[in-house]
Length: 165
Image 1 (tube, rainbow, N blue to C red):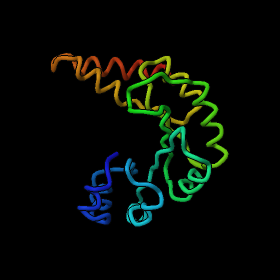
Image 2: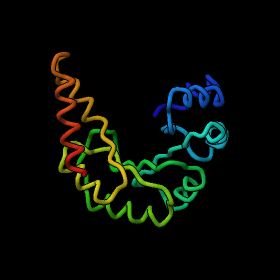
Image 3: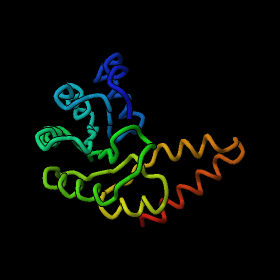
């Protein structure tokens, strides 16, 4: 996951080549809308890499249709309006939105934003194909000492993993 400017500066083909060599499977460029992604998508596709796009709660069906034409691998559904790690997650609303998205998208749907604990991960996993946790892991690192960070992260990831199985 990253931003378009560094990829553009490197060159899409060079980036795709290096990403493939590094073992990357797909690329989510958070600031690259589908209408501007054709050249990047072409370079990624030529190297066997998936192009992942974001879909927000406010994304209209016409835009989802455009995303469906270019997306490969999976689609990342942003479950909250606002910034990552903030707000209250309405599980029922997310499940309804995922059901609607499945009517337009032939790809798996990963859900991120607002997933802070095992109970929330379990509830999201019932509707989604993947659960994405980011800010909570960063918060765990920030709250830990260098000596305890690994243990705390291992514990949290084990809790999340157990909840979604």
